[in-house]
Length: 429
Image (cartoon, rainbow, N blue to C red; front, top):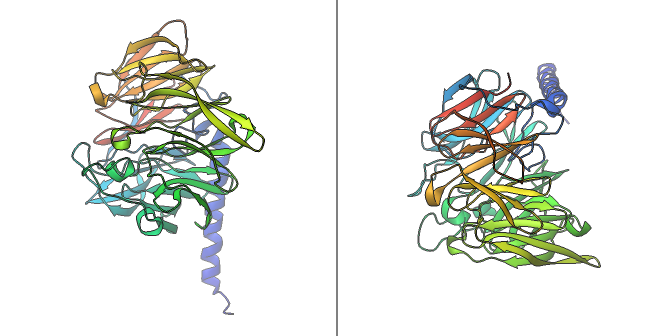
């Protein structure tokens, strides 16, 4: 056994100290200043209840900073005073860490060759996931890496196509889901488990990795991946992984990936993009063709079954993931209208137009206390009261160019991207 040199030991100790300080800082600010993954701290689009939020939008945009970035459709996340995002640089999908206070890039790491199709801008389309001293990133072609947040060094990596027999074709023929437009669904961390929509043909549709070293703990099913990532929830009192795949919606036993239930959903090109939501024993999913659906999960001994409680095509969800507030579902319908519906019955309460994007209408939602903040595809922020009785727009503010970004709210600031820039907008007075 060879002893480490004093310099090597010193460098290692200094690095551990920097990591410790960064994690402590992130932990100290986690309640107010972290948005570390897709749809926020709890992955539902809600700002934590104790966080200070604006009750109206400024009359004019106040930019803390804005900086040019490459193309891409993924969203930024914020953790420990850093912003993490993906973009296209020199025909490479690239991961970046930037200072949250200034936007200054701290490190950049090429991830994969850039994917381009015929409909959307080239570049990455998924959202980074930060956990402790690591950030997890994913390319359109299925390259998945765990990076050190200090310097972007690769801790471990897998490739969905090479390692799990997933199929990536691109926009050709009848290719569906991630095989067609790229891997967009973000991974989900629960404890030491990292769940990813891998889409492997040979029993690896959903894979559970050890987040620390990438070791496979279990894998399950053979569905091609859709465009949303898996979530973890406990409908019917059974903890499970819920995934919205090209073939439908499935529930897998958390401990070993055993199939608990499946509800088929066949649509053209498998455009299943919305992240599932869970309300009690209801799993809420949807697509542009199938409509928005409430699936009732019922316990049967040590397993469970799923049945359709309601289905509403009038409020069919396309690309946008909805949010839940006090038992009501708020989302974007097929004609670019924001809707409110009873989560238990699916009955629509109201709708109001917020996007004119037609078949490609898009808006992403963040729950700010008693209001919902929508960022539309035209780059407009719209603050809407979370009230089921009637639609009430509180205020509006144009802040960006065209965007499909899910914004990150941290410490009174909104971090978002459009087709050309990464922006930090001050929302608090």
